[in-house]
Length: 275
Ligand SMILES: Nc1ncnc2c1ncn2[C@@H]1O[C@H](COP(=O)(O)OP(=O)(O)OP(=O)(O)O)[C@@H](O)[C@H]1O
Image (cartoon, rainbow, N blue to C red):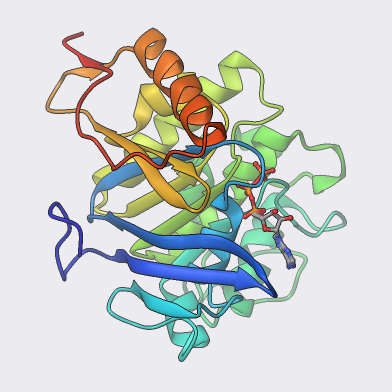
């Protein structure tokens, strides 16, 4: 365990080494995300960010080390682990011919959960429409879109539908892969506000991103992944936020150090300033 992690953290990765064939992608990676907090995982292309999510989802088995989602090993018990996870890939896969309400209804049914006992609409499933529309409203989807088919939805609108599902599932863990790529600044701000609301419900959020600005905006901790391990880590404390310019310089420095063949230890708190 890292000094700042706890056995009760919903997301825990300890000393994880994972290789695809002879290619070692994660190299003794340690990372923990406490309940009610957001960690942003940054790193260059191929640093191992998506592989980290894959290990948490139980899609990839490690060679050594420990992965736990609410205390469950996802490689040994993938269904149990995934019941506790909402996962938003870069492009959320939803049913184009169904409306937003019907998508939520159907995805809840697929996950073995329902929002209630009342019919949701055309889909024929039997969930509580009010619970679904409340969740869509909480996710920021405008009411005129609730019964529209998803065909014309933007990425931001699709994410809101997926977040509504996560809200209704009341999962303790939210994993996000590049959630703000392709979003305009306003949609990014909306999405970040949504993450803050999700955090307030006690969810542990791990967000893989290249968007340093967005990470600095919402994250409680930013971890820079390089060559499969956390090379640098900064934590916001209280109302203090991050200094984006210092973080950017630090991010570039981490890459430069690694390309020189050096591996730095995780360091706390440089790049953090009072707002
Ligand atoms: N299924 C796989 N089989 C073999 N190699 C893989 C597989 N998935 C990923 N890799 C390799 O593992 C390394 C890490 O990939 P990963 O997708 O985790 O990186 P990333 O940090 O998410 O990168 P990006 O920012 O480009 O999305 C890369 O070199 C990639 O080619």
